[in-house]
Structure formats: structure tokens, C-alpha cells
Figure 1 (cartoon, rainbow, N blue to C red):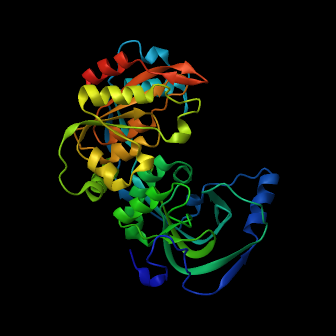
Figure 2: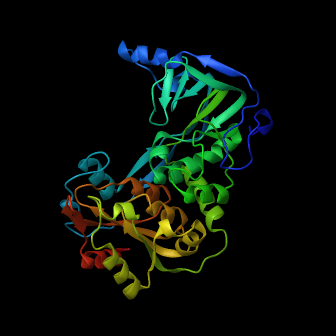
Figure 3: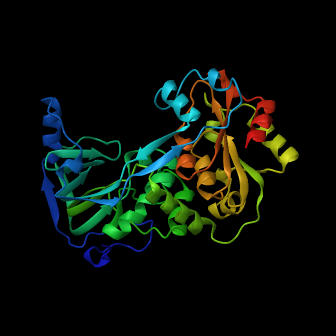
Length: 374
């Protein structure tokens, strides 16, 4: 369902949502939520309040590939940024299949969005960190059906927004009026958010507070074949024209991350080495628009760089037969990006850089020999 006549909203991506009526709703649901917390009463996820649920796509079998890695590299790992070292090691070692869950849709009636939290029939879901607590909500009332495509992780990390939420948007188009609580497309994630929304044809309604008759939510965290197909379609929208193939792109970290505990201290040296010896293009995504990123990454044989959200630009745009080469800090590895390459049936290689709290250094010879593996 995609009937925009039920809701009036601006056709531009940088204006807030305008409800179809001027009616506003007064609600004590935030106060009830606080009382439940004080009494120790559990509050289920809001999907438990759904009056309708349906399967959008079936489950499917996904191969978790073995990462391309030199002997002894994985033994350097001493910490994980997400999950445990054991979980990360298992994901890197691969060599097994997983069953990706089905993609599900849920329709919930009488939903209040207030202070970053969805409320419905005693169930909740937090989308954003709250601001100052207010026990009483006063929100515009929307009579139509909205389809929320954003996620909590997507509101915190650019990579999750681009790699997951933007794919869920395609589901929202078919279920109602696509809706987000992001009031601006040039906010936390800068101009790239606006550029991606424009390139992908995303025209969501926006509001920080709303009381709607029906809200559609999705369980779209799974990496099944349906999501893979949507990612393929996203790449087509972003790259479009044929791009000349070339050896690879090294994507530089954002400036803010170049001095942190996970900074790669010899990043520029490695980038220069790959450019001189192998003809890699070196790109700082924070300094260019997505058209330039697409021209570089759309034809790359390899997308390389330090683990981080900035690599998602390249992983989503690189050709189907391209590979990822990711440099990981030994005290905080993260296998999240490998999830994307496994879903798309692509190879993932890694180098574990040595270091501690003051930053890390990757051996250029390790990078060179790992590149030979891919």
C-alpha cells in the first residue's frame, strides 16, 4: 500500500511532517511507562501489540565465507568492539551456513511517538535517546497509515542507516507513507544523508512527535535473499552507468577517527603504498559527494580501509565480484561489515593491526601479502 493521499507532507526531504488534520492528542502514556519501570513491570517490544503481521520474504540460507587472512593474524585479536572475541573469531573463520530469518511486517494501531519512544497498548520501542522527561505527551494526530523504516542502530551509526535503514525504505514504500523521526536530511550524518536520499528517491514524512491511527514496522535485520536483492537494486540506483574497472579504492577514515584509540597511525602510508604499487585510488569520503564516491567505488576490484562506517559507502557500491580488505585494531575488532559481504556473496579479507590505546600500526608487508590472497 502506498497511498500518499492519506497524509499531507512536503515533497522535499528537509521539511518536517505535516499531519493531515490539525487535531492534537493528549496522552499520559509516558507517565505510565515510567510507573511500569518503577514497579519493575516488563514492557514488551511494540511488535507484540500488532493487530496484523505478515511475511514479506521467506527465510533463506546464507553462506558465511572464510575471511582471507594470513596465518597468525587472528591470534593477535585481544578484544571486540561488538559482541565477544569468540563470536568475532567464528565469523571471521566462517566456513558454515546460517539460516537468515524471514522479513516480517507488523501493523499497529493507536501508536504514540514521543521523546524518541513508540508507545502502543503497554508495549514500547526506543528509537532515539530521550531528552528531558515529560509525563504528558501532546502530539499531532495522523489519520492515515505511516510506515516506519528507521531503526535504533540506524539513528546512531551512519553505516547502519545506509546499509540497513535505506534498504528498509523500499518496504515502507509498499506499506504506507514512509516515515522517519529524523527531522532533517542534513543533520547528524551531514550532506551525505541528503545526497543518498535524493539519489535513492527517498521522500519520507518526518516528525519527532505523532499520534497515528496505524503504524507499520518491519523486522528487516535479517540478511536474507530478499535483502540482498534490495542491496543490488540500491547499487544500480547509485552507480547506474557502466564504470571502468580498476584495481581498487582506499577509503580514508573520517578526521575525527584519525586521533582516537582505534586510529590507524600509518593509514596514509598504506594508502600511498597501494596507490603507487597497485594503482589504487585514495578517497576521503567526508570531502567528496556520493557521485564521486560512486565513480571510484563502482568499478573497484577491491575496497580497502580501516574498519568503520565510512567503508559502507564502498561496500554498497562495489561490483558484485569485488572484494573487501579491512584493517582491524587488535583490541577492538568488529565483524559487522563482513555481514554485508557475506550477504552479497563477496569475499572479505582482513589485516589485524598491532597497538593499544594510543592507536595502531598495520604492517605494510601484511597488507601486501593479504592483498595477494584476494
